[in-house]
Image 1 (cartoon, rainbow, N blue to C red):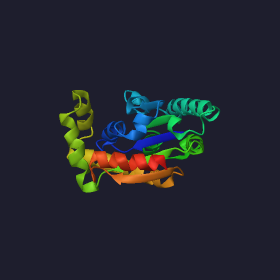
Image 2 (cartoon, helix red, strand yellow; image 1 turned 180 degrees about the vertical axis):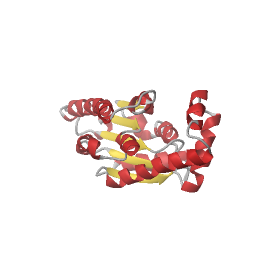
Image 3 (cartoon, one colour; image 1 turned 90 degrees about the vertical axis):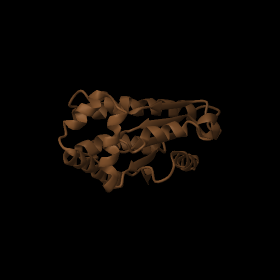
Image 4 (cartoon, rainbow, N blue to C red; image 1 turned 60 degrees about the vertical axis):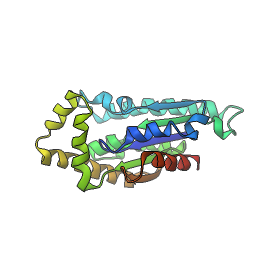
Length: 204
């Protein structure tokens, strides 16, 4: 089965690359596909202060679903037909949660289960010098609630510090991950070309 985890801080192009991937042959040729946005993998928790246990429980539900689908496919008479493999994209997953608490340990068991299914981890990141610029650009296209939350971090310096720390934590967790993985600098290549590169990697 094909599973892609797309990770990165705000405005690194996670949603854009997922939209572009849906235009590739990889997406079109698979009759069974699932895309879960960050609303179901991370942002559903925004209005609370989630415990580590709550974070693990949320992600466990998604891994359970993936394993159920994997069992159905691998036990079928079509399991040798690559174009019938289920395709699952997750926008944000355990790397985001681990970075927020600066600890991968609570999510190791989930990563082992993902590893057994051959999941691929993509980490999108900004050059530090462009981080604040890209974060502030989101104020023009996101809700007023987002703008208020962003400004709750303080001055531009406070915003830059928060997201730079989060990106550095993410990079550290990414380095620790045992999944098949690769990193791309956000916007270093056009989204269409980036999606094609990812599609080729997923095809193996």
